[in-house]
Structures are given as structure tokens and as C-alpha cells.
Image (cartoon, rainbow, N blue to C red; front, side):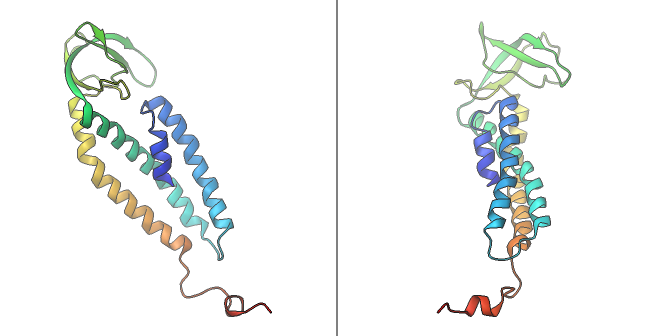
Length: 182
């Protein structure tokens, strides 16, 4: 469920929109857990489900990161760009870039260290403008870390899900499971 929510949240891979939609969908996962537990034929251990729910936020973040990295890996192009506009905020500066006289869609969220903001930088941009431009180093790190972290998260979430629903032996009453209505 968390992976589906993450894919929906990353449908438009802008950090501000994906975070808002992702938070909403993440909360809806908790509602889905309650609904699944209400329909269960045996006792559900909610402590384990809460742990799964909390970790699903990390899974959503990992899938969203993998989505922008996949888009840029598939169709991104490296271009030399300069800062056209610096957008200052409390959460960090972002940059609208210009390459070859035209503005690049989206914003660069991190300027390379030891580089002046007036110097040209190499970025990977999405020609369709779906994904914000990224530094090649950021793209390489996201690609290298995506699969190992995703598999670890899935394994941990799976391991935590089993005790939530697994019933050692058969806790249902023998009369309830073997009885035949006459």
C-alpha cells in the first residue's frame, strides 16, 4: 500500500507537491490498516502495524527519489547552465537556471560547493520539464543508493508485517472453525 501511495505521490515529481500529496496518502494508509484489521477474522497486533506505517514514510521517500532518478537517467540531458534567478527562503535557496538563452523548467535545489553562483555549472535536466534539474553527482548518488535501500526497507517492512497478522497455531476456537451450521 505504501509503495502505491509513493508512486501516486511521485506522479508529479516536484518536491513541494509530492510532499503534500505523499503526506495525505501516508495518512490514508493508516485508515486502510484499520479497515484491513476490522475485516480480519482474528486479532491484529496494531503495535506492529504502527511500526510498518511509520517505516512506510521512508519507503515512500525512497520510491519518490527513485522516480526522479529514473526519469533523469532515462531521458535527462547534461547541459551547462547559469543561475538566472536565486530564490531565497528559510528552508534553503533554490535556483532557476538558464542554458543557451532559455530558462530550464524547475529549480535546482543545491548549488555545487566551491562554486560561485555566477559560474556556469553542469546539470542534468529533463527536456519535458517533469523533474527539476539536478547535479550529476546527485543523480549518481540517487541511482547508486536506490535499489539497496529499497530492498532493505521492503525486507524490514515485510518482517514487521508478519507478526501483525500471523497467528501462531490456530487461535480461532475449534468450535468456530469446525462447526457446521444446521
